[in-house]
Structure formats: C-alpha cells, structure tokens
Amino acid sequence: MTTLFIADLHLDDARPDITALFERFLASSEARSAKAFYILGDLVEAWIGDDDDAELPARIAAATRALRDAGVPVYFMVGNRDFLLGEAFAERAGMTLLDDGTVHEIEGAPTLLMHGDVLCTDDAEYQAVRAQVRTAAWKAQILAMPLEARRAFAAKARSDSKSRTGQTDETIMDVNQGAVENAMRTAGVRRLVHGHTHRPAVHDFALDGQPAQRIVLGDWYDHGSVLRIDGPSVELRGLTVPMPL
Image 1 (cartoon, one colour):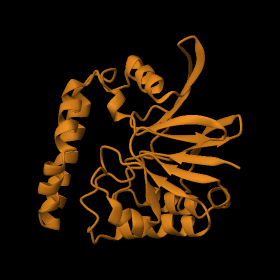
Image 2 (cartoon, helix red, strand yellow):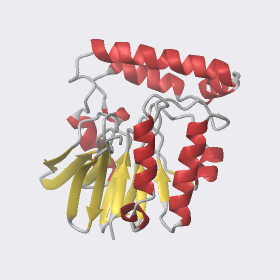
Image 3 (cartoon, helix red, strand yellow):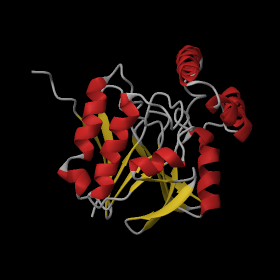
Image 4 (cartoon, one colour):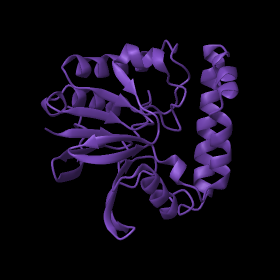
C-alpha cells in the first residue's frame, strides 16, 4: 500500500483554489486507500492558535478527520508557519502530532521525517529567530493576545518574511549538506523526507560510504505536490488545479 506525504501548502483565504484542491485530494480514492498520510508542516500560511474561529481551520479539520475516519492514519508535524498548532486542534482534526525529527518505518525503510527548516543552518538570522519563537514563554505570550491582535501580528510577520526572503541569498536558505548528514547519522537512517525549501527533488548521495537518499517535498502555491512511496517506488508528482468553468 502507498504512503503519501505533503508539506508547504500555505493554505490561505487568498488562494481558495488550493484549499479546494487539498480537500479534493484528501477525499480522493488515492488518499482514502493509502496506508498512511503525512503532512510535514506549513499546512497554512499562518496559524494563530487552536481557538481560531475562522472558516479555514474548520475546513481543514473536516477534511483530515474524514480521511482518518476512512481508516487512514493522518500524521502532522508543525512547520515554521504553523508551530502554534497544538493538541486541541490535532484532536479535532483527527491528526496525530509528530515531533520534528521523528523516525517512522516507511515501506520497510526507517525514514527520518522533518519539516526541514532546522537543516538550513547557513541562515544564522533565521535560526536565531526560530529559537526565540519556539520557547514556551513566547508562545504563551502570543496565544494570550485576543484573536484580532494575533491576526494582525501574523499579517505583519508574513509581510516581514516576504521582504526578507526577497533580500536573502537563496543558497543560504537551502539546507546545509553537513546538517543533513549529521541528522541522518544521529537518527541512524539512510532516508530523509522533508519540506520547507520548496525545491522538490530526490537527492541520492553517499553517507559514510553507504547509499542514502534525501527527498524534498514541493509547495502548493500554484499547484499541488505529493510524494508517493509504494515499496521501492518513490514518486514526486504535481496535482493540477482544475480550470474554472
């Protein structure tokens, strides 16, 4: 049976066609017949807390719970855009939360699962900010704000992130190969699946003299992207947004 992976959907009210594509894919026969379904972070453009009463979180929860209720385990790992997502929403959505750096056996191969941002060690500024916002004190401070204040804060954070991305060398924002190898070596695996960089590819390389593989998931800005692992078969493919009638 096939195991499916997605990441970096960045679902947002500004791109309703992508949200609809996500819902259709989770309701498809391909998803409903999978052995397991993994979402490796950045499911939404910004997550302001499990108590968000907007329509989008409700639609996401309905789609993932329906897939779980169809008998497919749904696993979720937070990314840099949705790290405030917690147990309350996960339970509502029928998802099992995974720690970044979890190892699962995927089709017979121990596989390291990560969002991927911690591997971008050349971007020292980003790593410093990441360390700050992941503290319990920072998250508690944000979640104590009223919903509207959190929405405004998230909007400004997205704007600042876009501005910084446009001014930063793209090579700095990619993963560091040494960090990749260290993570895989520590986990004792020969295969890594991650997202974050929006550079979908299957990278084969040697790790300590043995064959190793790093699979990068694609983003969902203009179309869908899914990784299918079925036995020895590894396939990264796109999902097309239907043209309007």
